[in-house]
Length: 152
Length: 100
Image 1 (cartoon, one colour):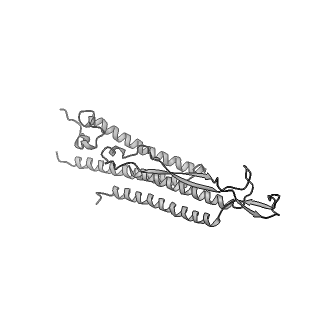
Image 2: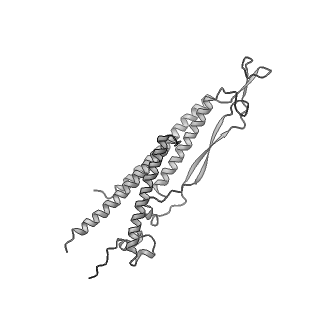
Image 3: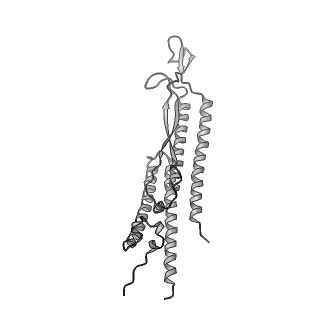
């Protein structure tokens, strides 16, 4: 377990949060989309996180000391995100006879996207991204402090 | 007159790579190859940082933070290598100052 593993984990965390923001902005942009390639209204995108395999980093400078390093438990796992298309979201039916995509009864099916929920998702993603970048910075500060050991 | 080479890894057998090379005449080579491997892996971090920069500039990289993290990794590896080099040079100068 080296400091570079922490870098990798923080990087994966930031990538995952970026994907969340991507999904939220896609949902917001398509909140009025009634036409898609597969037919029907746009379906909401949700991002789920899962534990990724423990990060395997290439040997770096300093890996020669790995033999004397005390192994503490299992290596920390990273995170992996997947964007899923909502299967339960069947849209909301709204009465709008003048809409070009309205059915014979005058109802049009709109995507079930809640702008408030997406806004909260965006804020949460931004804060989590910040948290990951802070973890990275702290790891780097620790490494820098280690390098300064014994100076002066 | 036969002066045997200075062998730093025999002073610190716990950090030499593998218990078999801690003794014997081959350990001097293993110290050299250890340094060479270390410098090569340092070179590798610099190269991967270069690749990440190229990807970011050409728009291939999906994540900006990966570029920065590759840069920081290369920076940190280099700082570490620099510290090790400083220590080695210090030890060498210390020995050269020794009165014979």
